[in-house]
Image (cartoon, rainbow, N blue to C red):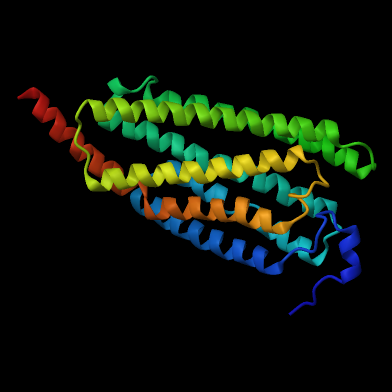
Length: 273
């Protein structure tokens, strides 16, 4: 086993602390296992749009492990920062697509938007957010390399992630409105469907928690208290994202969408009598 970085490297670490190898290895193992399961589930169910979960699950932690060996490497730091910044957007995309499918099955009349537009609008919003964050991250990286002020780039990154929070807040509001209308219509939902909706709500909460953490972190700047203490990263970024991706394994859309289709057939038949 390789020895950890010398203690005198901590002062020059781009992270502001000595990284935990355990956090990096745990992240790689859990995300890899979940991604392998997602790959199997996607191939068996032929729900190819779930490739977004695979793309989101393979990012970030390898670069973080490399940083454990060389925590002065700005390239490794930027690689893990960018990949971990992008990954949650793939999980969000899976949420948008799944909800659009559910609306198509349970009833479009209860939604303020057509099902397909949930994917179009909110995926585009995520792309805009990521683009803004990437531009800000690039400016901050260039500034960091030249020991210049990184505040402009950081402010742009914060604007990007705040925009992401706003778009997800609008999505959550639309989901709540849909569910209220659906329940008022007396549509009967199976226990499985209720569990699925609860699972997807939990995934949304995890992604939202991560967005809040990243926003506060960046508002403090690259030398702030939160960004220079790994426990916050592990508990408010790593853990919520692991829970989110594993929740998609447990509450896999294939099973629940099929059940929703059966509910829709029963309700339609009832309405026709």
